[in-house]
Amino acid sequence: MITLRPYQTNAIDESRQAYQGGARSVLFQLPTGGGKTITASTVVHGAAMKRNPVWWLTHRRELVAQASKTFYELGIPHGTVQAGHISDTTALVQVASIQTIARRIGQVPDPSLIVFDEAHHIGAASWDALFHAFPKAKILGLTATPWRLDGQGLGHWFDHMVEGPTTRQLIDEGSLCEFRLFAPSAPDLAGIKMAAGDYQRGALAKAMDKPTIVGDAITHYTKLCAGKRAVVFAAGVENSKHIVAQFNAAGIPAEHVDGTMDAATRDAIVDRFRRGDTLILSNADLFGEGFDVPAIEAAILLRPTKSLSLYLQQVGRALRPMAGKAEAIILDHAGNSLTHGLPDDLREWSLDDREKRRKADPSEVSVRQCEECFYVYRPAPSCPQCGHAPKINVREIEQVEGTLEEVKRAAKVERWNDEHECVTLADWQELARRRGYKSGWARIRFEQRQRRAA
Image (cartoon, rainbow, N blue to C red; front, side, top):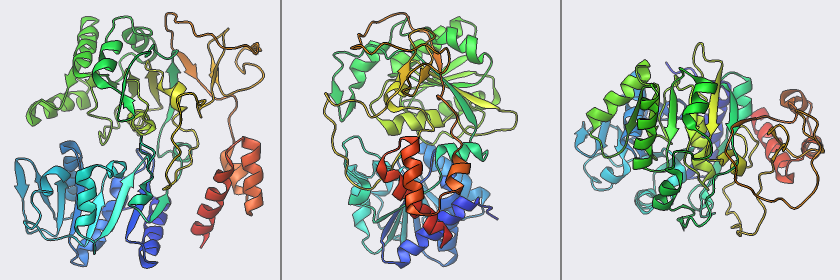
């Protein structure tokens, strides 16, 4: 029996209405940790009960295993299709690796419903080919971040987007846990070349693989979250190994994991981390998506990225609640929060293409760091922590020894009380004006409320 939260039920209802209204493809957006898998599993279960074949597709072995485990727990019979392992090809529901099933078309029942997990990757050639391979099949996409680095909107594939609650709303209702975020000045990445819209991996790993890179990760871990289980996001495999060596040398049990390891070795390392035998689990681009361990109490970011999606996926690993876990600690040694904002910032998602920003354009994220107490806050005449009023001068960038300082808001926004008072579009527009939000936010929230009330 699947017990859903109200917003999950609303998402399913809106998806069904979209299909009934003629949409072939629906995208379900929900923040990391909000329960995309369990929500979509209800849709899969319903389709299977009607004898409709379903493919659940993803791009990593860990995500195949996670979905299969959920289906077993919910009593959904299924087969699995991945490299080196194919089981029960007659099952109506198949959980599959995209790379493998693309070579196995015809060996399992053709789908009437295809679920694309982590659907922000759908622009990749193999994903796009499967999207168009079965034109009569309905499509359901799942993502926390409907955002591509190249600016291409997911509206090229999806007819309708269902937006779930925001990260802040999920935190307020206890579905995600609170967090404290500490951040230094951004590391010096001058001269690092770009590849596919993000930093070139080899050059980035070399730039970040320095013992004194913007503060000492071990010192800050010991100071702010000693004894807590933390996932490290490193800039490269060798960088990750060096980080682990330094933690172990400091007497803090740490292990590295990467995609070249065999399945048994990787699973054993993760199991030791789950039990708490290992406190630090370091990886490079392996656990940004689908690593579901609520016991993670901290995320250590040592991999700068231009990707908002990657940043939110990484910090989201630590936001899953667990009994006895009061908060998550995020140590942002990469300065990503200074580029992308706080994890619970309100973000406007859209299926439309985004205008590509030029290098000279100002950042859309506006934060300020107090030059007296290092408090980071949204723009205000004076620092809300110590009252210092900064002079308005051209900012000169100076590289200094990094010290992590907590990122907080200037003032707590009472979102629920204000939003409950909004009835008309004009009400929402006035609230947007008071909060300093973009104009499109008011219409999005007004239309969401209208849909839920219908």
